[in-house]
Length: 365
Image (tube, rainbow, N blue to C red; front, side, top):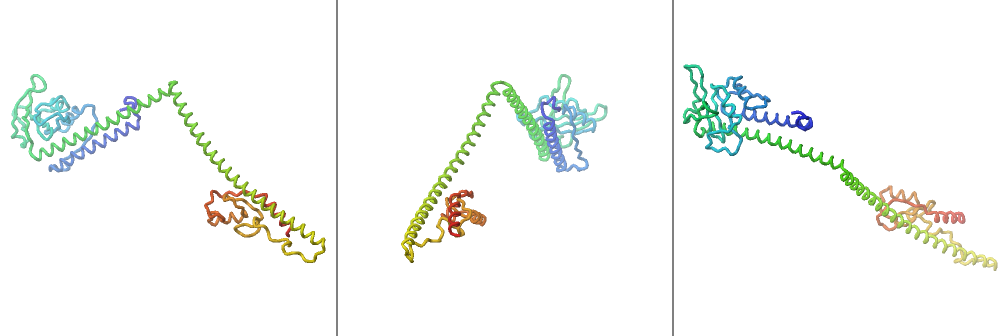
């Protein structure tokens, strides 16, 4: 078998040949075990494996080479043969019976039954050869076989003894197994041919304009899906950014309102203080005293100190940047103010609040 003649790849041919070799070895080992179980000395059991185009021709060649006097063969693997069959169709068994040496006794069995016997005989005068003693009791008859002028001794269907039947059934079973494995190999070949056919069809489709159009259409659909998915992800990110921006803007407005309120109160207190000084009042009411306490919005919720570098976190509150990062690095996953899980760890500088803190610190050194 070659790649050019079979249409298979070399690796596939090697795999098929390896499978066939394994199947043959398993079958020979089973035959070997049957011979040993039947009492044959192990040293007398020889196993050989040959490759030939005709099984029948090679069996005949082995008979001549090894001077075989007794040969038992399975008649066929065809399930249509019955126990009552007395004739065989032209098969390798037919070829062996016609071409084997006349001195070789041949028994053909099927389903554990002896269906045909060809007794060996010598061509030299004064010599004779009889079949094995276990088959002497079989009633025999001469019937025409293989064409005019030829006749072979054929037995009527007769059940073998228990040991012979067991051996025959074992041989026949292994023959069936061998045939099954060959069918599996043929099935693999057919599947390979089918795959090759489908591949050729695809290649032909690709070479045609309609096939190319369909492939381009499918690729365009895939690209559109990818773009839509990327667009949806971008939209989701933009929505998140808008939400954070709105929260920051609200926080900014709240801080500005607080600063304006404190500014107005400071201006009012200063004006009242100036008027009191102009009148010459020596004592200043307690409520007029300027508070030196920093506004609460200047205090970091974590460290409770005035913030130097205020940043807005994902929860909308402002923290000292270093303090908040330290909080995260020590396993903090929730907001220090709301105790809710933080959506992210991003920090945005609060420039307005930082400017206000800087002005306040300059006024209150």
